[in-house]
Each structure stands twice: as C-alpha cells, then as structure tokens.
Image 1: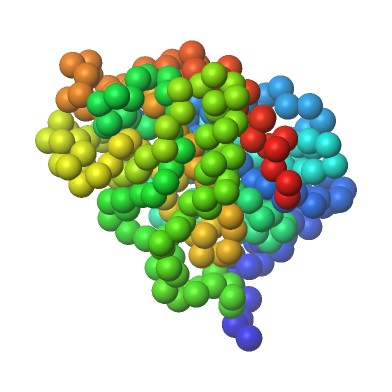
Image 2: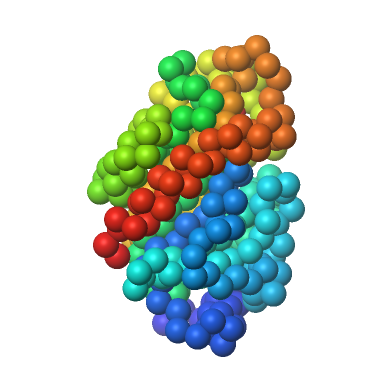
Length: 279
Ligand code: HPA
C-alpha cells in the first residue's frame, strides 16, 4: 500500500466537495476545452457549474479564453464532466495543475477522455477552421507528466504508447465531424512547451518528422489519461497555418478569432460525438 500523498488528499476533498455541491456524480466522459473551445460549454442543457478556484486542488486559469469553470452536463441518462479552460506547462507551475483534472476525472469514474485544442496547421492542405483528430503525437515538450511516483497502484511504470488515441473514439469523432459538414482529418500533433510560437525552421523540421499540426498542450493529458486506462481521443481546431507556412505573423488573439468562426461546426461535431458515445 502506498502512503496517501497530498494529491490523493486533495482528490478526495475535491470529489467530496463536488458530491456535496451537485449530488450524485457518475460521469462516464470528460472533456477538456482548449483555446477556442470554451464557448462550447456555455449553452449545454441541464448543466451545473463551479469555478475552478472553489474546488480543492484546482487553480484559476491564467490565459485569455480559458474561463476556469467545471461543468457537469447531462445528455440523456449520461453525465459528462467538462473542464472549461486548461492549465499549460508554460504557465510555470509544473505538471501538477495539468495532471489534476485528469486524476479527478479518473477518480470520479470517467472512462472516456476527449481533449481539445487550437493548433497550427503544418500539413499544406490544412485550412484555417479545419479540424484534426489526433492519430498520434510527438512529445517535444521537454518533459513527461509521468515522471515521479505513480499516480496510483494500477498504473504501469513504463506505459506502452503504441495506441494512445483510441481507434473507436477516433473514428466516432471523424464521423461526427463529417455528419456536420466539417472539414475533418486525422493526423499527428507535435507538442512543444511554448509559450513562444515556433520558428519557420522548426516548423519545416517538424513537418519532415511527420507532424501535421503543432500546439502547446494535450499530450500531457493524453499520456496520463492513457496510463490510467482511460479511452483517450483528441481534437484540434486548426486556428492558423504554422509559422512560415503563411506569411502572417502569429498571435493568440488571431488564434481565438479563427476558432470563433469555426465554433458552430466544432460545437455541433462534439455534441454529436457525446450523443453517440455509449459509455
Ligand atoms: N503553434 C503552437 N501552438 C499553437 C499554434 C501554433 O501555430 N496555434 C495554436 N496553438
């Protein structure tokens, strides 16, 4: 038996607090909203919400467009936990704030994990507003969220990474996008720590290495979720062409604006996906 860590205690306090606030909590799915995806949670039916900073172990978000609310949303007789806003490695607080939502979702019984993000398109055929379902990733973040003691006794010390993204969930995401007339592709995501955007030379190099899109998130949550035994999938909104592919300079504001334009199809695709999931 491992001794109870401070994280274990905070997870226990957070789950007691959420049950006291919301009553019965039996979510089978968890979604993390990345840049541009937050508004998706604004008008979901039958939803209860709490700000992150009221929940033990969770901390407020620091980046524009990441509102920092946890929602419990009912679709039919199923519950989905939605983290509206994520913490990033470049915020400087290490892996704990990135790991905590995944550990909490796992503790609450979640089995399916949907991660979303905004990403720069590297593949030349990608247009702004397209979506990409992650088929695999390259971790260039300079670290791994599994370093340190095991988060629980069942987690492998050396998790296999052959199939981080669940094939059935991937194909359900593609079908859900196509059913809503979205331009949706599958591809490889390369994650860097940021916060600087990449140089054109880096983007050329990542293209040669097999990356189709680039971003600053998702891979840590996918790695941890997969190691905990969750069925993981992830969806990027291509918010810009990566550095050097378009002559335009990059800004977070432009990333947010592009995602706003694509939002109706992103929202419709995710709602179809959540409705088609069978638990
Ligand atoms: N690079 C890194 N992260 C990003 C980008 C990008 O071009 N677009 C959105 N997030």
